[in-house]
Image (cartoon, rainbow, N blue to C red; front, side, top):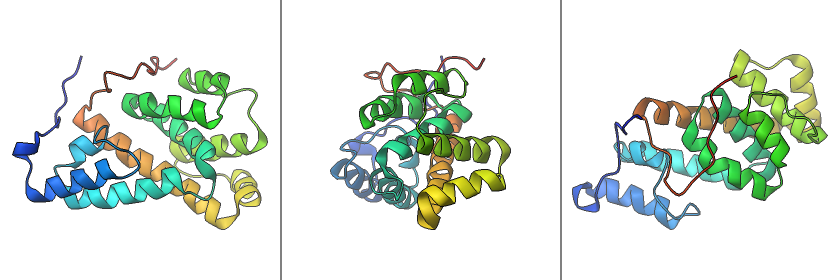
Amino acid sequence: MTQDRLGPISLEQMTPEQRDAARAVIEGPRGALYGPFVPLLRSPELMGHAQRLGEYLRYRSAIGTRLSELAILVTARQWDQQVEWAIHAPIAARAGISQQVIDDLAHGRRPGGMTDEEAVVHDFSLELNRDKRVTDPTYARALTRFGERGVVDLMAINGYYTFLAMVMNAAQTSVPLAVDATLPERP
């Protein structure tokens, strides 16, 4: 079991800038300070910019919440990021991603039974994370399905959640105790 390298900071120990940054997250749609925002609190200005970007990508992206959550899960699996997975697997299920797709992703399998648009998001996200680029055919499918704004938002979702995965993996951020969705070991 690993220990948080950058665990929670008590309100009394926070600087005024940290308190302001924490308040912005707590008063926003997330409603609490958890996950990547715990280590990011050490850099309140960065955290503020990150949380605003994440708020757009998670709640208002051009591809919608359901597909954004799918891209987040692909990224979490690629980075073996337990906190992202624990938080977003239940959200993805509530947003309409089938449990079979979630389970297949968790076990490193290409999900069966995806809709056409889910397959586009999956393939685009997998290629971008795994190969560090997207093939022309996959890019063309995403462009046809989502347009330029949607493709840019899909790129950004993958990049943003990669950033958060890097922060939490390096900080050894703990999975919230109230969450029971965990990633299995890689096959």
